[in-house]
Length: 138
Image (cartoon, rainbow, N blue to C red; front, side):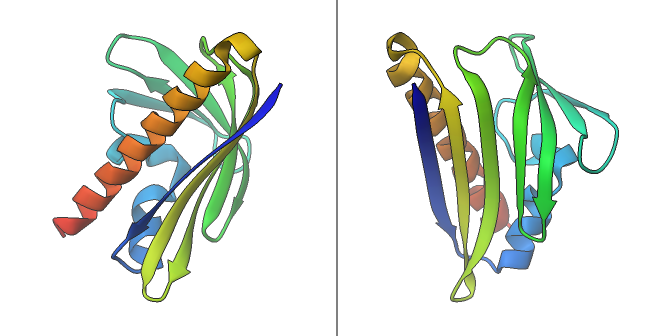
């Protein structure tokens, strides 16, 4: 079954400042909670980032699209309870503040639907709150 997940958070900083932190596909470790190491293969569209978690699990994402304030990626490695993941991270201007957005679509069994949605929603909610904390300190 196809499922969509969305998380968004208003950040009281200009779009350019928020994008400078979250926009580089290769530097997710600087703002995304729970990543202990990042290894990069390639550059531009097709770049693969290997993300190591505290328990040693490694997830690999591949950049599929990038524009001025948005990128999309797929998961190409790691154990996840869903398939055909497409994630999009974007930052839009919101009257001088920024709206940081995450949207994903996945194919998931009914059995894993609720836990997968909760997992991805919580993961990005925590990461976006971390972005807000990081930028509040600047």
